[in-house]
Image (cartoon, rainbow, N blue to C red; front, side, top):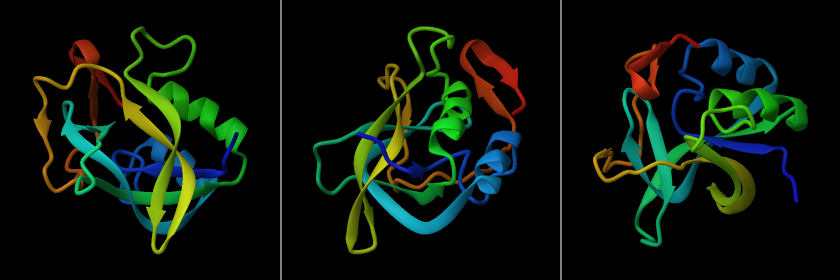
Amino acid sequence: MTSPYLFVYGTLKSDACNPNANNLHQNAQLLGSAKWQGALYLVRNYPGAVRSTNGSEHVLGEIWKLNDPETLLISLDEYEECAPRSPKPHEYIRSLEPVHFGVEIVNAWVYIYNLDIDNLKKIESGKFINENQILIRRENEDIRR
C-alpha cells in the first residue's frame, strides 16, 4: 500500500527553514493541520514521535500531499536516517499510519522514532516548536540540513 500523504511534526513543518524542509515545501502541497495518535519526545533539538495506545495522546503536525512520492520519500528517508545506507539502528522508521485530518482519517506516511526514549523529555503538548534550525544528530554530530 502506498500514499501521497505525509504527516510532519518537526523540522519539516511549514515554519521550518532548512534545505530538506524547503525541498518538501517546493515539491508538495500543504493541506493543513493534522494529528496522529502518539507521544512526542525531544530527542536533541528536534522531536521524535512514537506510537501510543493512550487515545488522549496526540502528536500535532501537518498533512502534505507529495507531488512525486517515490522520489521525495527517498530523499526524506536519508534526512530521517532510515534509508538503506543510514546508520543502524535507524533513528526513524517510515510507516503508513491513520492520521486525523479535520473530520477525515487519511493514511499518511509518518516518521516514527526508532531509538530508546527512556532518557528523553516528553513534549506533553504534542506540539514541537521549531526554535533552532540547526540539527544536532546522533553522537553530537552537527549537521546543517
